[in-house]
Amino acid sequence: MKNTKLFGTNGVRGVINETMTVDLVLNLGKAIGTVLGPGKMVVGRDARKGGEMFSRALISGLLSTGCSIIDIGPVPTPTLQYVVPRMKCIAGIVVTASHNPAEFNGIKVMAKNGVEVSRDKEGEIEAILDSGKFTVSDWENILSVTHDKTAISQHIEGIKSHVDREIIAQKQLTVVVDSGNSVGSLVTPRLMRDFGYKVVSLNSQMDGSFPGRSPEPSPENVVELCRTVKSISADIGIAHDGDADRATFVDETGNVVSGEQSLAIIAARVLSRSKGSTLVTPVSSGKLTEDVVNKVGGNIDWTAVGSVVVSHRLGEIGGELGGEENGGVFYPPHQSVRDGAMTAALLIEIMAAEDKKLSELVAELPVYYNTKRKMSIPVEKMTSMMDELLKLSKGMKRITIDGIKLLKDGGWILIRPSGTEPLYRCYSEGPTQQESDKWCDEGITLIEDALTQS
Ligand code: MG
Image 1 (tube, protein in one colour):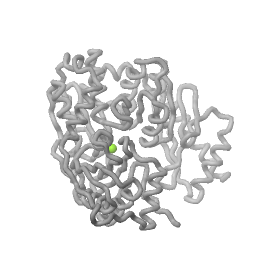
Image 2: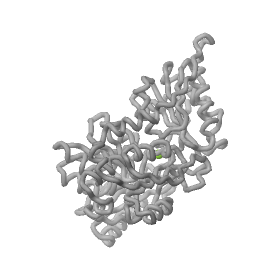
Image 3: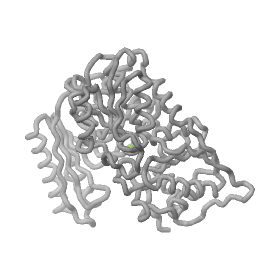
């Protein structure tokens, strides 16, 4: 039986009413209910167009299999994840396309602990969707939908219980929150006000056409936030992606702090609390992360790229922290998934505890230089290329969890096939730009050699 590959690295995504249709979502609801149900499930959505349309289709599908539903309406993904176990649900589903452009929507499925289901479970859902062998409930066992408006408060209280409120209250910070016209506006501004801080909100009106900025909080998309922080002399700017599981920070001078820098600042403090603590992070993280972890005597557990892999690994080994270079921070005492508001609370707690400006915390970090290149590869050679690359790099110091990461003195080269296009990407990092460029060239040469031999 042919199995449709519907789930990508982070759930199902598609263009609204083109590849992501009501019919598909209705059947996905039936398939999810068949595989994970019957039982109580919680459903939420972000502020995207089609959110209501898709969540109703999804809920109808789930109900037809005999599940009961708690509909919590618009929420950040981490809010839904937080309440799945607390509302004693067997699963949670959020209608979101995270940071994708406005025309996209999607579905993320969580298990009963609030963490995204495993790849195996996704495969089972796809197989049921293909076969059409859905569970159909008897008419007398069809259950109902209840509405619950407590999820946001529960989530905010949860975050507050994991930081030192007294230390935070000693400071009087001015915080600018750019929610990007999505669900981040429901949690982070309220959390910061609860801390006693002055909050200025940007793009806080939820609007699925995203009039303020693109849902991806990349440096080029947060220019308005940078300008605002500087012009009103705020202490920090916080920008979320479309479902607020990530946060990008801006320091008081209006400079964007990279995701790896904010992770490094948080990792250094969290891992120094107890000896031999572990950070779980994908192989795409760099020297900066490694340096700060080594400095405090912590360990790094490398994983393949993808937030779901990090969450699952944290659960397996009981790591103290998880993090990605894109600004995703996983704080297991709270929950083992990315949480943009929790990340912001951790960073602000550090600023308050050490009485430092964000730019000062950034200035303490070592600086490395990056290079990124890519090379087109014939589609039919995408897989065999990796075998050749593995052969060619045998004997070199390397990590082969996801692509090949060649370890250099003071840097590294990472070669990975693209998951969506026929090309290989080469990233490098070094103590100087020249060194990094040189290593990236080395990586590209290796790709060229592998191509001739494959
Ligand atoms: Mg996201």
